[in-house]
Amino acid sequence: MTERQTVAVIGGGAAGLAAAISAAECGDRVIVLERMDRVGKKILATGNGRCNLMNTGAPEYHGDDRFAERVLWLCGAKEQMRFWRAHGLALWEEEAGRVYPVTGQASTVLDTLRFTLEKLGVEIRTGVRVTGLKRTDAGWLVLTEGEAVPCDRVIVAGGGKAQPKLGSDGSTYALLEAHGHRLINPKPALTQIETETDPIRGLSGIRVRAEVTVLRGQRRMRREEGELLFTDYGVSGICAMQCAAYITPAAELSVNLLPGMANENEIENALRHRRNIWRGQPADRLLCGLLVPRLAERVADQAGVKTKDREAEELKNDELHQLACVLRDFRLKPTGIKGFESAQVTAGGIDTEDFSPINLESQLAPGLHAAGEILNVDGDCGGFNLMFAFGSGILAGLNGRKRP
Ligand SMILES: Cc1cc2nc3c(=O)[nH]c(=O)nc-3n(C[C@H](O)[C@H](O)[C@H](O)COP(=O)(O)OP(=O)(O)OC[C@H]3O[C@@H](n4cnc5c(N)ncnc54)[C@H](O)[C@@H]3O)c2cc1C
Image (tube, rainbow, N blue to C red; front, side, top):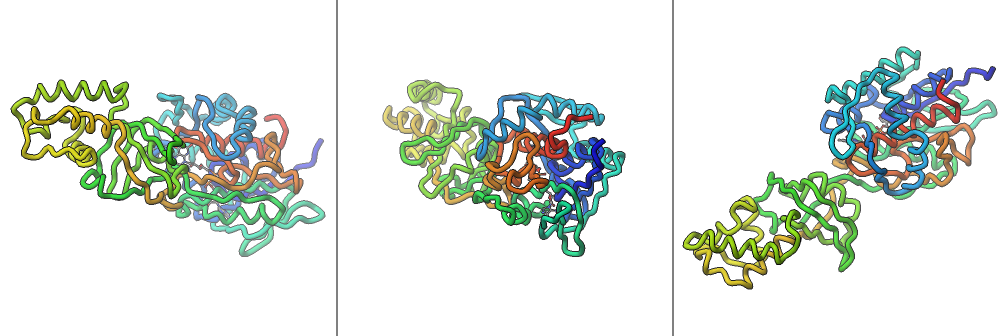
């Protein structure tokens, strides 16, 4: 029989709580050290309070995407569903493979985790900030502002830098760097894009279904279709947030405002038909029924087509062509992206090269593990980030053992 080990988990977020459960279920004595006044604050904010906790579709990861896929090959949607079912959480799958708790409440996910930890006798110490990690002859010493916690294994799950008000302030990167691990520049991802504001004057609050492409010169860096929300500083919505990581000083955004139409010819024909429909009426009615009036105005501005004090039939064919071009390629010049305060996730993080995808153990320092967003893995919207956090956390806790 193997001796009961003590495992210290740094960070009581998605990855840390999942790791604590799987280690405790294997018989380890587990202590969770969390700097905030309670665990799981970020979980409560996820999915607009509904917690989109996994995705059953193909993996959509960036950074060390191959590492993420290996982890999820061992503990992906199927295994995680089994994990949740074993702890009494009923799930509900929506479109595009997005999975939520059946209650539609993120608090149900956190309650499931908390009550399971309580049942397993896991010790949770909140308001404890970890400041260092020391290797000893007997194992590890976790240093906090007040004390030193000895343990056999340590799992670092302190998250990245996204939304520090929810706990993750990037302070745990240094714990792994001190033991030889490399930090890949952390950047905000899944965040809003700031743009020059003249082309979007008066559009704040308008939502459209659009296709957004990030261009760098002639190169298409990323294309996303979905909801786009205009704001007073730029654009938001899933579509914009997924493009944010590709914004550089040279980038431009091309917004196709009519993604349902095949090409400019189809749009131009539709505009000629509309010119007939609105014969004898003000020219600004031409786009009525396609776009809301404020957006139609900005499109006409960008196309250089004057619609005020003219009738629809006065619009020339080349003006309709210009409008069709802008409807398919409404240009916005990004000036930056919103920072970590607004970002949902961190791109970059600790290089996974020196970690095993089987038990997330460091190959540089035995007994040291890392899980979740602290690693150089970030996923698309749709449940991919929590799925990696839970999956990597479960494997780190198991430490290569089979779930009993
Ligand atoms: C608003 C919002 C909505 C989101 N919605 C979704 C969604 O619907 N689906 C999805 O898949 N992903 C979503 N995400 C992303 C997802 O929540 C994260 O990727 C995931 O929670 C990361 O889990 P983690 O455990 O690695 O890190 P975190 O959840 O950040 O947990 C890290 C924990 O470590 C603690 N900690 C940090 N430093 C220390 C220290 N020095 N000492 C002690 N404790 C420390 C922190 O307080 C925190 O509790 C969302 C994120 C945000 C911000």
